[in-house]
Image (cartoon, rainbow, N blue to C red; front, side, top):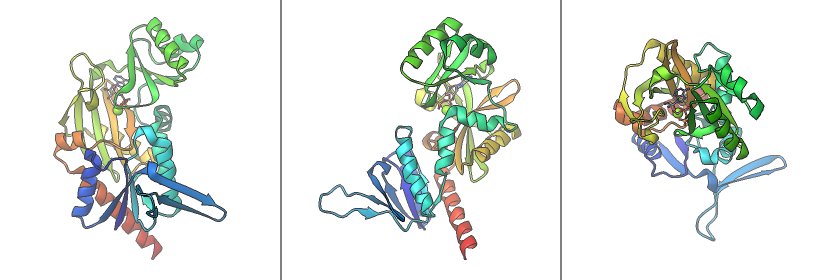
Length: 305
Ligand SMILES: Nc1ncnc2c1ncn2[C@@H]1O[C@H](COP(=O)(O)OP(=O)(O)O)[C@@H](O)[C@H]1O
Ligand SMILES: [Mg+2]
C-alpha cells in the first residue's frame, strides 16, 4: 500500500522507525511536511499539493495514498489537522482522525469526554476569574493543587502550587498571558510515578512505569524521568483501552496515575513518542502501527468491493 507519513522531520526517532517498519513490510511511504502543503478549495472541488523546494519544479499533487499516519507536533496542531482533514475528505483512511486528535489535545475536553463514562480521572476544574480561585481549589480537594495549561505537552505547562496564595499569583501571570488553565487534584500517592500505556487498534501493546527524577513530580521522559517495562493490571489495561476508544483514537499513549481508588487517566496522547516505550519494553511498536494501518486499508477494500 501507499502510506503518507505526516511529519515535519523524518529523522526524528518515531518517524524514522515508522518509515523503516513500513518499508520492511513492503509498503511505499512518503514523508509529507504538513507545513509545505498547500490546500486549494474552489467551487465544486479541492486539491492539495506539496510545493517543491526548487524554483521551476512543479508541485507534487498529494493523491493516490491508501492511508495517512499523522505525527503532528503540538506547535502545528491547527495546520496539521487541516491537512489531515483534507485527506479524510478525499476518502483516505487515517491512523487517528483529525477530530479525535483535536479533542485529545485539549486536556479539559479529553477529561470531559472520559467523565461521561466510567473511567477514573482526577477531579479537575476550569476557572477564569480571580474571584473563583478559592472555590475552584476547594472543588478539586484543596492544596497542593496541580495547574495545567490546556494544551501543554512533555511536562511543560504542568505546575504544582502549595497554597491558595501561590495559585493566585501563578494564575495572575498565566491569565495575564492569555493562557487558559485547569486546576487538578494532586494525586500524591503516585509519588512522581505514572504509567504510559500504548494502545494500537484497540489492544494494549506495551506499558511502562515512568519515575520522575529526584525532586521532580513530573515523570515525563523529557523532564528526566526513567521508564521501565511493566505488566499492567487488568484495571490499567481496561482504562487505557477504553479511554482510547472513547476518544476515537486508533493509536494513543495513555498516561495514568495509580491512586488509592485505582488508576486515573490524566492524558491521552495522539502522537506518542516511540523511543522511550520501545526502549523500555523491547516491543516494536512502529510495526504494530503499520500493521494496524494495513488492517484499516483491508477493511476498506472489503467494504468497497
Ligand atoms: N493530578 C496529578 N497528580 C500528580 N501528578 C501529576 C498530575 N497530573 C500530572 N502529573 C505528573 O505530571 C506529568 C505531566 O502531566 P500530563 O498531564 O501528562 O501533561 P503533559 O502533556 O505535559 O505530559 C505526569 O506524567 C505526572 O507525572
Ligand atoms: Mg503526559
